Amino acid sequence: MHDTTDQHLFERVLQDNDQLADENRHHFDDMGAYVVNFMSAPGAGKTTLILELAKRLKDKLSVSVIEGDMVGDLDAERLRTAGVSAFQISTGRSCHLDAAMIARLLHATPHPEGQMIIIENVGNLVCPAEFPLGEHLRIVLLSVTEGDDKPIKYPVIFHNCDAVVLTKTDLIDHVDFNFETVEKTVKALNPKVELFKVSTKNGDGLDEFLAWLEARHSITLTASAV
Ligand SMILES: Nc1nc2c(ncn2[C@@H]2O[C@H](COP(=O)(O)OP(=O)(O)O)[C@@H](O)[C@H]2O)c(=O)[nH]1
Ligand SMILES: [Mg+2]
Image (tube, rainbow, N blue to C red; front, side, top):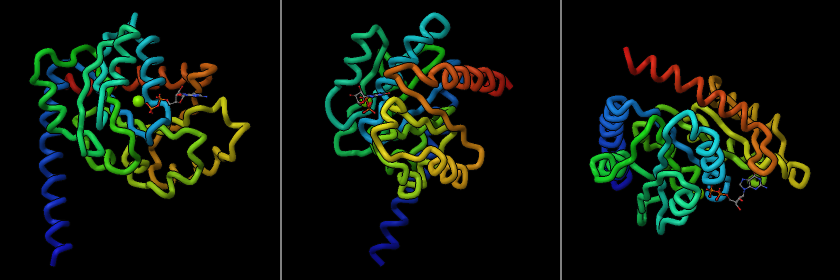
């Protein structure tokens, strides 16, 4: 009985979130903003990759970043120090951002603006998977130091994304991480997913990932204009 009630409540929470995420998506489309949600375990390299992308995009697109963390604004400060516009959401005890948090920020003054809004979700391979925010693209990062079994253990997030970025490839010789194993598991969970291998240390793979992001931007603009 207790379990059924909990399940029912959780489903209501997810439904409410989905509805708000749809409203956020309309808001983003009205703003002309292309929105990308980056998710991963803590330390996989989200902030470092976002900084690198913002640096490479700055002459082409105006970019702002929404930072989700349980406590503090270290990552937002890191971005601002590098000249990137950043907005902090402190989630407190919540292990993920939700659509209501994003909606409140969009109605705040000042709020994130620009042609591209990058969201860095709270570091976690579980909770962010079930809470869409209204984003156009969902990207999961997995660093080679985390182990190649993670897509098997955390399938929902890998099933529910547009691309998987394997990070810290400069460290591959120091760890047991098999790219083929990951590719096979991820493609079985999510046949349409794109896979990238990048290192922000030596720059490997960044051009390919950026080219794909920009190509998806054009597709999103065309779709939003219809
Ligand atoms: N060797 C290596 N270290 C990286 C790379 N990307 C990020 N790091 C390091 O990994 C740590 C966590 O990175 P961070 O971007 O803060 O991860 P986040 O918690 O997902 O935002 C930092 O010490 C980074 O310098 C990479 O491509 N190669
Ligand atoms: Mg970070």
